[in-house]
Each structure stands twice: as structure tokens, then as C-alpha cells.
Image (cartoon, rainbow, N blue to C red):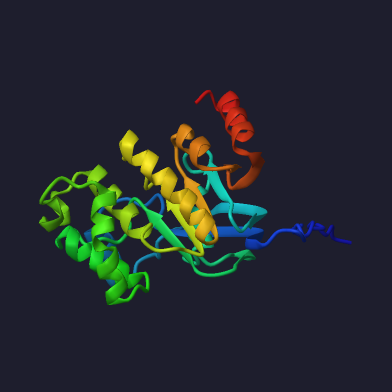
Length: 263
């Protein structure tokens, strides 16, 4: 008789309001052409000649993660490169389908990353308008929030009229965060978007994240800068090789991570 694995159900505190439930989540990537040789032209030529199909490798990025996040929490996600942090945020945002298990959210998650979709050939001004409209804000709401976004981003005088391609990485990151933070989100997912901000901007960002927590749902933050995680989050989840390693108060988890990794 085959062994059957009994999975423990996710426990929910009846006295608190859950906003995100991750239940035995597994995410598997299929990477085609892994290990293949040659450039895109040679690969296309092989396809036209109906030669052997490209090899496929499966990457098990998230392996059975389960946790509950409650309304008002700010949760840091830490781990070494390749541990599955960004994959987890994409799954919560609904951008990656689970291989098994599930993600359940009360409201609409919004993912803010370093590669958030701003158009480099358009001015910062146009990107603000498009970004606000894409988040569901009305033209009137966008107009009302415009100057607040510009001031929050702290761009040098006149740069808001320049194409985004002329911005430094730090300027682009500040503008992305300023646009995303202009609207109250059910669940805000931040993936390394604060990494290039200066000290002054980090203080403003932390204050705004605290406001977002009070106004709406929950905030998730992926950042390699552990001081930012400690200052911004009250809870931290440490992922190792796609699996839960530790989940608890920010100071305790970050201290354990530093001791284990030497970072």
C-alpha cells in the first residue's frame, strides 16, 4: 500500500481578519532549451528543419509554502538569491498559476517591482497619468494626485518632462514607488523597489507603507537590505530553496538569518 502524505491544514486565527492565505503552494517553472547551444538564429533554423525539439527542464521554485497574513500586517520576505522570493510575490499577485495548492486573497493584489511597467520613451508626466489610470484611478483622481506623486518622487526640477530613458535607476525606482503609493491597495507587493532609494527616500517610503497598512490591507516587501526589512516590517518570512525556513517577528528572523548566512 502506497504511503500517503497527510498535510496539515493552514491555521487561521478566528480573532483576526485574514487577507492572504497561501495553502501548500507549489510553483514549477518549465524552462525550454536549457543547456542548449547556439544563438536564436540557429535555434530558429532547427525549428524550421523540424529537428529535435529543445530540451525542457523543470524548476520547482516554491515547495509547499503555507502561511496566513492578516489585515494590517507588513511582511518581509527574505532569503538568498534563487530562494523563491520574487516567485512567491508573483504567485500572490496572480501572475503565476500554482502547480498545486493555492493562494487566496481578499481584494486585488498589486505588484510593484524594479521592472514595473513604465514606458521609457514617455515622459515622467505621461507615465504618472498612465500608471494611475492603469491602477483604476479616474482622470479626476489622477489629476488630484499628480503633484503629490511628483513631490514624493523627489525628481530634480524639470525632469518630470523628460523621457524616462534619461532617468537614473534611482529616479526611476522612486517614481515607480510614488505612483504605486498614490493609491490605497488591498495587498501591496513590493519587490526590491526601494533598493535604490537614498536615506531620505527610505524614510518617506517607510512612512507611506505604514499609512497604507492603516488605510487598507497588507504589505509584502522583498529586499536584500535587511535594515530596510527590519525598519519597515513587523513580521518576516525566511524562504530557503522554495520552502519555509522561519516565520516570526522581524528582529528575531533577521537575526537568525544573519547568524546563519553571515550577511
